[in-house]
Length: 334
Image 1 (cartoon, rainbow, N blue to C red):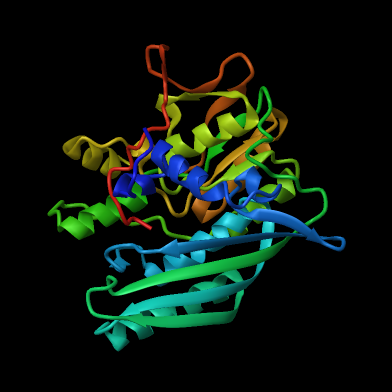
Image 2 (image 1 turned 60 degrees about the horizontal axis):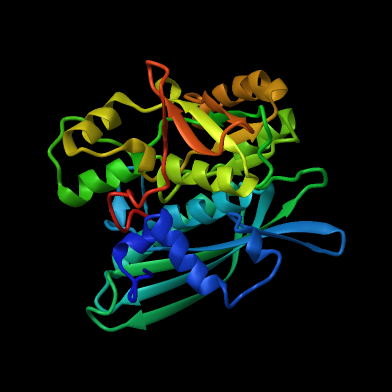
């Protein structure tokens, strides 16, 4: 039975998130939105463009590896990059709680400016709103980004083909782990750092090697499991991944083991999934490994027409289904 109210599990990136999106989306029926991509892709004249918007409510607002400002820029830019777009312009809107520190606001604004400059995107419009004490939590940020998709690039979650290889660009689960550690003040000897970063440069070098990449996704809310399930559903294909090949740092493995968490469902903010024809894999992987954000990239599996859904192969060779569950173990990680 459909829930009568919204709860935190609707923000996990899993099945309940999809339920909530369907409830809203039925009022906005159009062919661009119905594709349910990371960004809407459309044409103005002969120019193909990608446009996306995102809101950020992360707690804490400053964390090891970034802050809410850096996250807001990278998160939205990454969404248009997953459609192969080159980022051009961005909007910035802030909802501020009465009593919020102006020094913190200045730090966040500087972080936004520095990150935007590194990416090469301009913030050309914005808005601020102030709400009363206790009506928000310090600061919420919304960003929208637009970019150009070059001719010949056709990336979509529905494009995965039988026999395609699947690459993950690096160690998963770092962002959610870093946020959890800092919010709860866990006293571990090793501090896990968020992977918060912009992926436009990595996408550029990948597309130069293989302009025929079929699917790109950044596995944010719901993690690797949610993203792969979305791709399998959209493409009407099956996906089989090898548990022994999924890149996870020893620190994240230990952290998850202690708390009983599954890194496959944990959010990332600087990783991508690439699905492409097998003949390009070696060249893509070689290029990725020369770049800082791709040095830990690994081939984790294949697309198949012989199965539906997503399956994970154990060390013994047995398969179990990787469900799209509401298992993001923590709210407000982005």
